[in-house]
Image 1 (cartoon, rainbow, N blue to C red):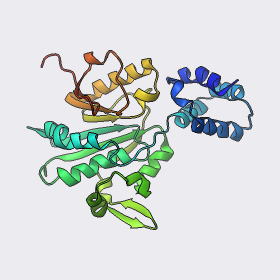
Image 2: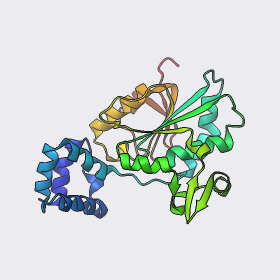
Image 3: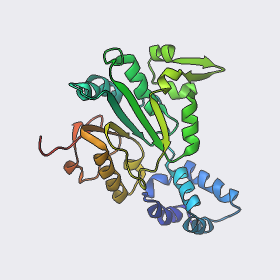
Image 4: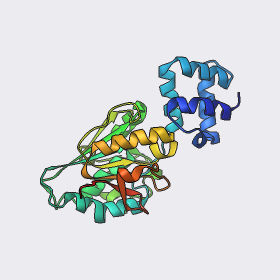
Length: 268
């Protein structure tokens, strides 16, 4: 059995598309896991995945690991600053701003939102408390995120004043200040198989669901995101991603270039 044949067989069982995983780096990771288990062929590993739910979950983590950076896709964060957050905060009655980062990996995305809030909004909205839920299926990545320690390569798009104001440098590692981490709570969660969290103002779901998941799984997740968002909530997806074709019944594109959508309300 070739690697492509293995992917075609196993990906649908995980709710994934098989084509995004054809890269050599992914193949090497799978091959390493096969050797760890004492196997030598993809068909042997396929049988293990079919019989062992824990191995199935492990393979899903191997295939969908995301690489992130602080303030990845600067235009998205610029639009959040100038348009999305001001719209969410306008005439706000409740005192909590709820953000959900799905597939948060090692925390760069949710921490970027926290940094943007502290740098640009906190002073003008002292009565509003930012609460960021950051979820991922990989507990190892979540533990790394909670530490808040990053190499310089993860911060190459971060404004210099943010680096100076919110990080300290130690042995070549940049360490995030506790005041930034306080707004972010990390939790293990499988968006495909578990129920969503309600009452969100903004949801980030970038470079995961709408890149790797099958079309059926994408629609399933999109409906969960719809139910999770408040009436005028926003969804942010990856720059190179697209929503399933049925999305107009759920979301309308507000900033198409930045792939930012608002929850559709037929009564508006």
